[in-house]
Length: 127
Image (cartoon, rainbow, N blue to C red; front, side):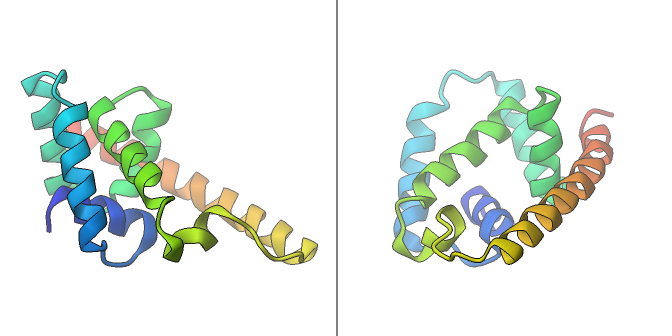
């Protein structure tokens, strides 16, 4: 599994469409040329060694670590917004207040758990 597949799967828990994968690689090859070899190796190592890269990226974003990985996640989100099959991830089209409050609560709880796990994963990368 390459980096585009891993990042997309971490975000959406499904296989990346081939067209999106091509766009990601094309954009990444142009956007991330200024990063040092150390940063690129750090990102590559993180993608290889860590299974829960969503948790790692969350903690890295909050603690200003792994800037290349965080940038690649952002790029994937930007590109994924353009796909019609991902509309439900970005827009809430339902008018159900109780269900919405539950989703917000459980998403916050899930984020907290991911953040705590991500802290430990960051330590694994920065040993």
